Image (cartoon, rainbow, N blue to C red; front, side, top):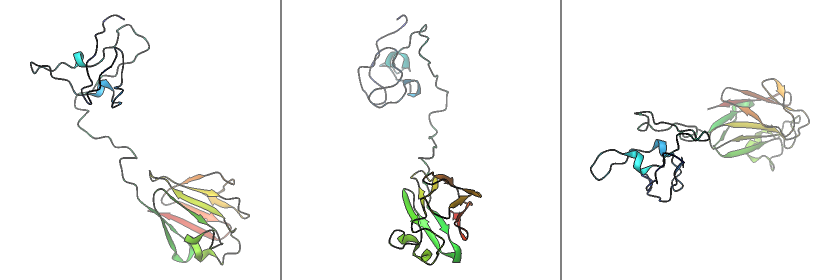
Length: 184
């Protein structure tokens, strides 16, 4: 391949063995295009000697150039932001908190659904009616567990065992008269 030089160690982790045309360090998995420039012995910035070079005529490789000033800011993704627990408000102002990474079962059987023992007197609920969960990233869902009288989200009845996304402010109805408000 024309225009390639043998690459040196990774400027981030020092891993050797990068081959020409390689886009990502095999030691730290950081794209070479996003790494800081390397200073040579004279103190001049020269990133091209340390990073793998890509052939100019290679149609399979797409080189992404670093935008000046883009590295100092930190990445913000859903995983970077700590997620909050959600609260479920039931009739009678009973509230159940659901932490991220946790799921609770909702129904009238206190042995199967210990978090909602106050629903034991609701005859129109199934023993195990639905399951509510909050993922580690903060996204929440509810699944109907094959209940007799149904679980409704946004006015639509859920198919059994099909999770439906819920967000703070949403209202979920179990059977005819158990309304759950999802809160932060």
